[in-house]
Length: 125
Image 1 (tube, rainbow, N blue to C red):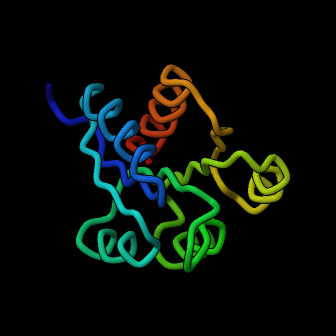
Image 2: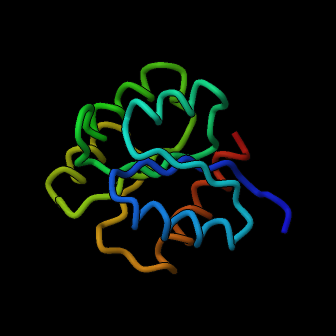
Image 3: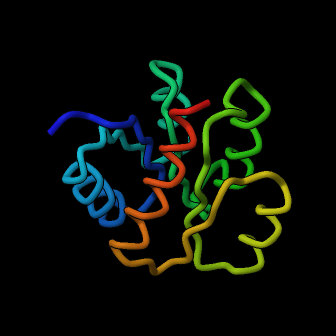
């Protein structure tokens, strides 16, 4: 299948990362992964993604801080989709310019639909 977008998945839960990687790869996306914010920054330095899927609660630099850093440092055009079970955090981040939120636990169809919507937007910018 031809690659249709470069997605970076950042989550400290390997099983979640593996699930998302497999699901989106099956859809034809190029998927890179990171288990920490530091790994994510190194991966982004190699090549900017077309979209970021980002967990909020991670050790070290939390996802909300990382999202702000990315938006303020050259990736303002890259859609960031927050993944969290914390509805309050999701609401506050939406007001700060985060592009979307997937409420954990989310299902496969919801993930694919959300990613497709934002990849289309990202590729037309």
